[in-house]
Image 1 (spheres, rainbow, N blue to C red):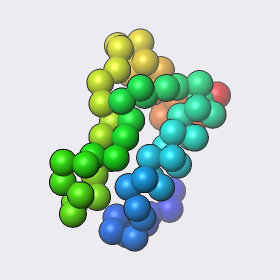
Image 2 (image 1 turned 60 degrees about the horizontal axis):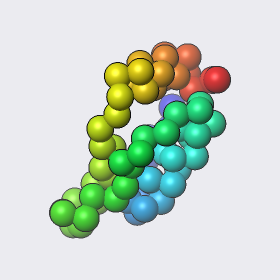
Image 3 (image 1 turned 90 degrees about the vertical axis):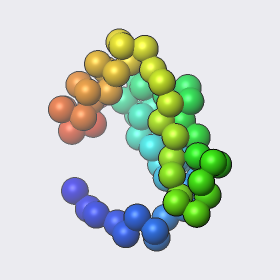
Image 4 (image 1 turned 90 degrees about the horizontal axis):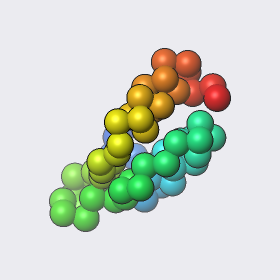
Length: 67
């Protein structure tokens, strides 16, 4: 896994990268967005998901993202 300086990537870019990676694993986080409440922190809002989606996300992470 490659690490990146957390300040070197725009939150909007991170959201799109994550959205694409999740879509590759057939996972949708409906509330995934840039957190606009604290723009100086560069946060990404992951939001709330159903339990089955959380389990699917855990499985995808455990499998290394391979669908």
